[in-house]
Image (tube, rainbow, N blue to C red; front, top):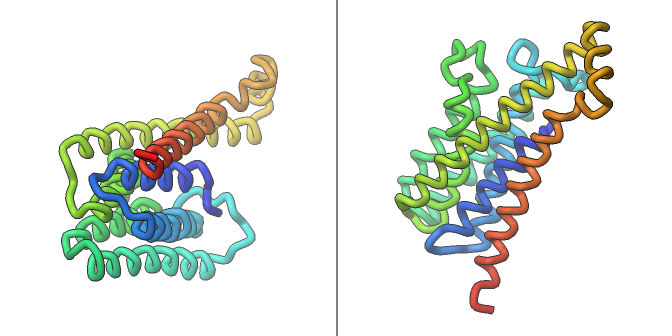
Length: 223
């Protein structure tokens, strides 16, 4: 349900933002990770599974349970953001929270929003740039020009991730539905079927290791 490649990559971007921020607080990082885990990891993925919305690959949850889980997860993430704005950072954080919430609702619920939010550009911002920038702002109360360049790079990584994921899903679907496609895949080698998945895994693992490296450098700087 949590679609680990997307969730882990988003959380990695959150860690990168905190590690590269001018100021750094472990409690703020934990709160930001919790907000994104609930809002995107849980909320957006549950909403994506509702019948007629996105890729319905989980069959044992009812639509009612998916609505409740999705909205509860998104609501939990928003609540953490609002508390952070009130207690720590200030009201400007609410702008980032509002944009992120709109994307987290609009992208998976594409039919309801007429597909306005279901675009690669929205995914790049919502799952790439915003987690990083929100984390930077939550830590320091500001966003620097270098942070904007870094956020642009992460947006490109997010686009690569979603497009590779689509290729992987398409290959799986074609192999299930068409005998000739399955035969062609087998003839091209036993690993051909998994090549897009390997690339996706490399992106996720690389992002995670980079995030851990930056965090370790920040935590142990000067030690």
